[in-house]
Image (cartoon, rainbow, N blue to C red; front, side):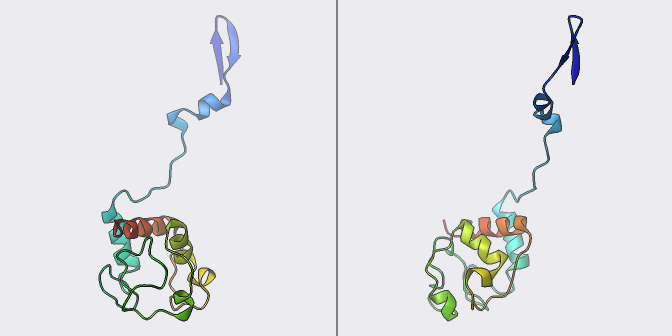
Length: 130
């Protein structure tokens, strides 16, 4: 950008122009409430999971921070029972991206390809563990 100041042409650094709010790049839209995460959970996970009862999959209330394969009253695959980790943001994201890459031989074959949807579901699961 060129500006005339006291009869002189002055070039303003491009970084100053790019840093203005008018030229900021749009951010990815993320769910802002646990209601949105709940809706995503119901749509993507609710056929096999419930927060408070076992279905095809284990109940998920309290899953965040819980040791993998440890919910009482649910029969996990040997692979998941033998996993040596507790669920956190990173591991839940990896799990929802590709369960077999994280725990080969598990019984869940579902994937959530969209990272925004994974973040929404993880935020909701996290809210169930508080």
